[in-house]
Image (tube, rainbow, N blue to C red; front, side):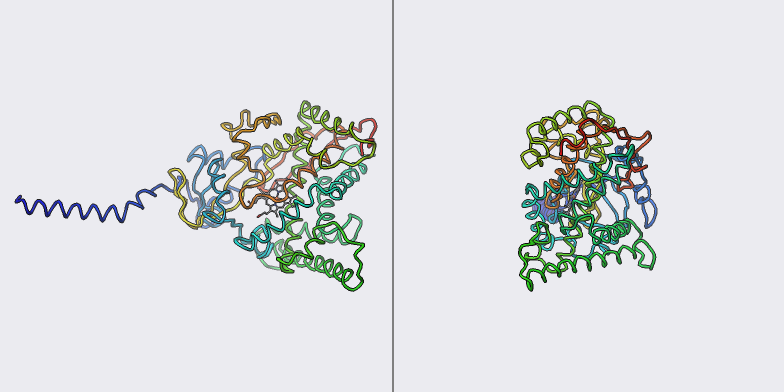
Length: 480
Ligand code: HEM
């Protein structure tokens, strides 16, 4: 080859390499693979297998099978969308920390239809931020207030007192009564005796049944009933708001000022009327079922762990011994309930009150060697991390003492979600459970009926409602 030609060829090859690098290097650097997995059937994909009920303290056969076949991160087709399922602690954490940047909350359509557009649980962007700021400030001002703490304790004593002549109770029902009474008092200032409370409870139960139904707006279906129930709750809440305004405005009645969320909401000008009503519904929805499940999990697991129960009793007896007879618990007492915190953490880990949350990828996201394609659904599965034996030694044992070390696993423990959507009510829920336990363990011993099991449907339910046999202890209710 003549010299000129050689330089021409070298120049041309260099030019081509330049173009290739220029065009394809960014793509090459981003390269990764969509996680392995299978899409299953057309349309439904693997949704039915994913939703197949299993004990809530297990990961279920679907995740078991898919993780061992494809690894902790795999692709599937769920809820009518291509999906990446993550059972990996680091990826879950990464997803939660990147809300609105790389991922976004994305609940299925029927949930939107029932909750409405301005519900905090489904809202995104600025609307979500506005609603969330109000929630955080309400919870922060409430959680340590004597009025709230006294209400929680009074509600607990009320339930426990009603057991006096009973040999057995269905605990899950009792815990739901308790958490509903607490939240409806805290949010709307209503007591269990008021007719509006019963009305709201009935509508609320219908509303919740609709959240897990097929979105068919045909009269009589659970979905249609739920939408109507939501409308009725909205009008009840609207009527309560109007009544409060009327009293303040026309009658100048400032003496009956209540201590509930609604009272503060009335004066919040960053929220519209609809957003205020939605806010009330979100608080009821967020605070009722989950908290009663945590209580039930604690009672269920403590019923099988005598050593944990004994240590818990010592903690609460020591707190009680510092108080006068009948004196209410306060925030400082709650702060001393260190072992109770560990028991609750362990019940959240082993019981898995919330199995997973719904997200979608806002753009192509690279994580390790994976690419999560833009628009795909992403499901961080908390239960798989909670029960991962590589993260928790003897993961299938209830062991509150494991929470004694304050390591990375604790930091990435997300039973209340994480990042900018983490649960604003977590502290309220824990106070409720801790105060209820305070009186329960000092007044009763209990035994869980044989064969009871919490099942993930994936919303958790107790098979038989958690029937417990009661044995009253001496000095009953000397503690309240
Ligand atoms: C044991 C009890 C509770 C558990 C396990 C729990 C769990 C969770 C989880 C996992 C999330 C995150 C959802 C997501 O990322 O998509 C969440 C959000 C939320 N929770 Fe809770 N929760 C509990 C109690 C409460 C209570 C007592 C309230 C209200 C009084 C509440 C109100 C909310 C609200 C409003 C959200 C939405 C937050 C947002 O999107 O910014 N929760 N909860």
